[in-house]
Length: 191
Image (tube, rainbow, N blue to C red; front, side):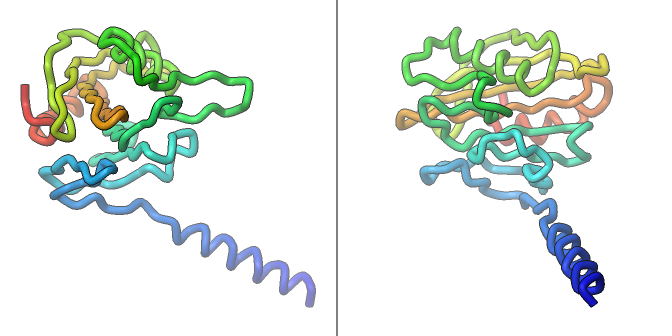
């Protein structure tokens, strides 16, 4: 009887664990914290549960699956917070500081991409951008996965109310980046 009870409890645990699903992020306003939002122009899937390393304020959205396109949305990082949390107390990850210069903010993005496992992360074409109604920086991103797949991206960062808001769109350069770029560009307000 004890084995049956244990098997039932295990089956129930597995069933309950399966209840945590990937949520829909429907077209329309997507909360970025502190009453701020971005507007999604199509439905995405919130795949945040697939990344236990992400910081709680960071949401991961995808249309075709995380290997094919990912949109990182940092919902107001306070000083001392980053896009991801360290795997151990000894590990250091890039964190936001309130006194960062524009160059340091760009470096925060590239260092964060490296910490997320992307290789040779670089930014280019820095230009003004707006995110959550605040002036900031927009940049193109180039990187590689650990398997050597070429990744293209678009990033936008803004500081507002002492917090950092980040939007990073990443996808394989071949096909997927260009396929979803119009939706991301519309969300970020175009060039």
